[in-house]
Each structure stands twice: as C-alpha cells, then as structure tokens.
Length: 239
Image (cartoon, rainbow, N blue to C red; front, side, top):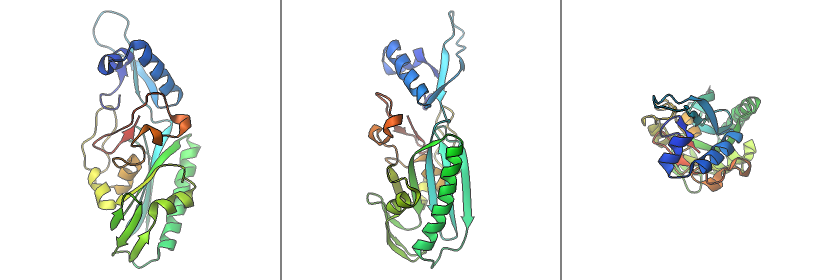
C-alpha cells in the first residue's frame, strides 16, 4: 500500500498472491491497530460493486528524529505517511560545550515532543539520532566529533535513558548521511518527500536497517500477523 498507494483488498490479493479472505483478515487487523485506514471507493470503470480502498494511516505510530549539530539541536516527529507531526529546532552554540549540557537540552525538547505526540494519540515506535562526526552505527556511539570536541559519546544509550525509550529501537548515524537521504525521491502511496538536508526529519523516518528494519522490532501490541516492514528510498519506514 505504501509503494502503490491506496489499494482495494482485491488488488492487494492480486499483487501478493494471497487469498482475498486472508487479505481481508490482515487488513482488518492492521486497521484495528491503526496502521491502515479506509480511503473511499475504487472507481475502476468496470462493472460491479466498487471496492473500498485502504491506505497507510498516519493516526497511530510515529518515528522520532533528533539531530545535534554545531549551532543547533532539533527534533522531529513523523507519522507513517511521512507527514511532520511536530518539529522544533533550538538554536545554540554547541562548539566546545560539554556533551552533558547539550544532551540535557536534547532531553528537554525530546520530552516536549513525546508529550505532544501523546496528546494526539500517537505512539513512538523508534528513534534515530544524527550527529556531526564519526559514528559507530552498530554501537550507537559518537566516536569522535572534532567540531564539538566530543569523543566516545553513547548516543543511543543516552537518548534511551533520558527519554525513557530504551525499550524502543534506537539508531545513530552521521548527520550528513541522514541529510543525504532527505534528497531521495518520494515513494508512491502518499508518503511525501522529506525536506532535503533535514537530518532530523530523515532520522524520524528511520534510517535503512534502523528503528523498524524487521517485524521483531515493532512493539508487541502493534505487531500484526505476517506483517512486513520495508524501508523506502526516502527512508520512510512503515508496515
């Protein structure tokens, strides 16, 4: 549905090779979990009753994106359609400032973002943080950031601890890598292109193999049977 846009259940069955009854059951489960929603009737011009289209829903789950740079800290919340639900940037000089002080500011704006998401009934399912410097992606550690004067900062560990989201998948990467993903073309299905150069927005969408690179990484209460998770060229991750 993300790749092809709103689809009828019959069209999904044709595309996947699943039976119509199986598709109907899966769609019903995904709709109950707030991951899909109905999007009007299909007007194909053929004889017979038109099918009801289903589309990706932006009303339930979101990704969190954070960026630390030399002169600002930013946070972004994106839903499954790629829509920005909250974005805030704190302009400040971070060169030569200790990691503890900067991470405390990140914690403050991060908690505000979580509160705003909760107020709209949105559930975070993962987070990504970008930083300027050499990042050990596997360990989630900022190994060296010469422009900040930092070394060996456990970004993902700190983010999880400070915001109380250690139970979620959290990834880290160089902010330039994440910003480059922002220039990728949009996918079909209604997900809009992310702002080029906006590392926080791309981080919120989830880097490839990042916060939802596999079914096992979706919180249990949101995990539908036979769900698959794909990462698009625009780094939008969804079910």
